[in-house]
Amino acid sequence: MNPHAYGPKSTRRTAMALAAALMLLPAVFSVAFASKAQAVDNGTLGIHPATESDFFHLSAAPGDVLNETAIINNYTSAPVSLLSYVVDGLTTPQGAFALANQDSIPTSVGLWSPYKAQTIVVPAESELAVPFSIRIPADATPGDYSGGLIIQEPLESGAVTNAPDGTPVRMDIIHRQGVRIYLTVSGARTAMLQAGGLSWSQSGDSVQITLPISNTGNTTLHPQGDVTFSSILGVNEKIEFQSIESVTPGSSIDLHATLSDAAFIQLGQVTAQVSSEAPTLTAASSFVNIPWWILAGILAIAIAMALLLSRAIRFTAKARAAIRRIEKEDIVLPLRGRHG
Image (cartoon, rainbow, N blue to C red; front, side, top):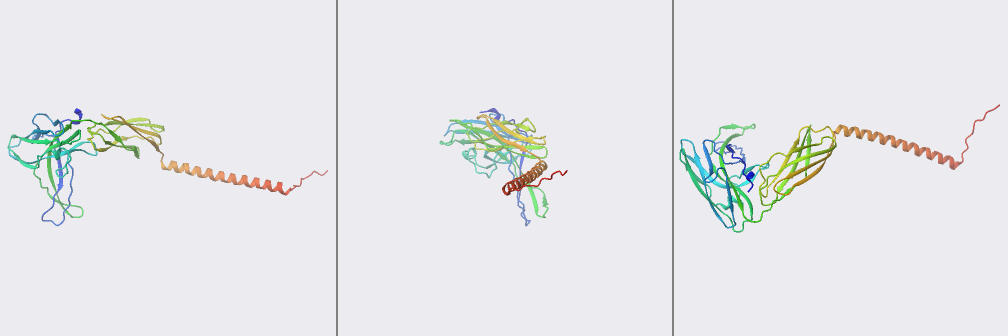
């Protein structure tokens, strides 16, 4: 598998914030936030594979059973009780890797692991080996899959505050850490990336370019790309899309690029090119932006010219009609003679 799929080892501890119901208060404001769980070792708790330094990198054939072990480290001076479970991996809308919430419905690694949610206790200043397995279905589709083994600390109750409308709110915090599981099921591999319509919007001097992309193959992709502005009037420049980590099979995200200093008037085309393990994608769109007051001025000039043209046409028509009338009636105009 591509080594970039796994990313650098993170040392950031992330949190999932949940608003808990207040048992003694009549009104409750509930919010749920998705959280990113990554392999971490922050000096308090850590989790990593028993035989690898960062994440699990596994390969199997349909029907195989994988038996793996994660090591959980407790660096504190007191035992720690943790909830442990396996979930699927996913791609966030920003193109980052994340692990699904506990209540999500698994479809791959989280579904294939018989290791269900359970409470484990890690003794003080020690480590605990946690065995788990993944059973690949006999009819599993070849390709890349991802997931993670989560360790979740007990809920931390927050202080009660009041929302602007007076509703009592208590924000509780749940800390999760997870070790990623990258699994490749053997068989035919297909790298396919599809692009949607390229679009742009301008706000002041900034132009935002958006390109939807979808991984329609069965391998994890690592797209990167750029945007070229080709204008008759305006900028002629190339900028890069924002960096993303990966796009897992079946995932769709929007690539974004920002042109900070757009020209006053834009008249041309914008073209995007995206490269990855799949064939290169190209998408284009017209790029025309003229300030409204310039359009209003052009419209006013056009209206004035139309009025002048209309008057000229009417004058010419009247003159021709008068000439035809004179010719029809054979009117002889008197000539002023000279008398001597």
